[in-house]
Length: 135
Image 1 (cartoon, rainbow, N blue to C red):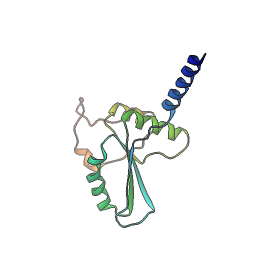
Image 2 (cartoon, rainbow, N blue to C red):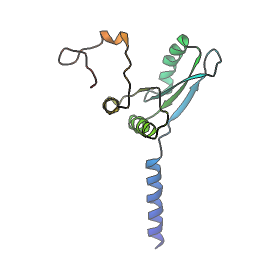
Image 3 (cartoon, helix red, strand yellow):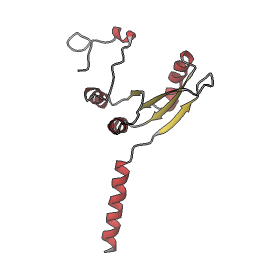
Image 4 (cartoon, rainbow, N blue to C red):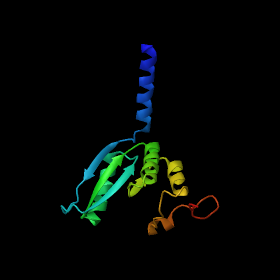
């Protein structure tokens, strides 16, 4: 009886952990000009240590923007964006992930917006000789 109760408790705990949104390492980079009004939220698989120079370059051009950077696993990013969006809440402003299959699925399922990047026009061509496009 006690063994069965212990097993049920363990199962309930594991289910709770599986349904809890993933929390990775979160680092907030204050706006260089000291303002607190605008914040860019990023979910990424890139280690904070490697992302810091990219964030610094962004903030050099946007000194009034603070950045909240969350280092997560690729599957956790996708699951979190879906859960936050479906719940009607806010989610990240920008994602980048090593899980391109998950990123494309998010885009194809309507969880992303187009972000035209002029420099990307000179990017690589797909197997058909055209620039790859999301449907």
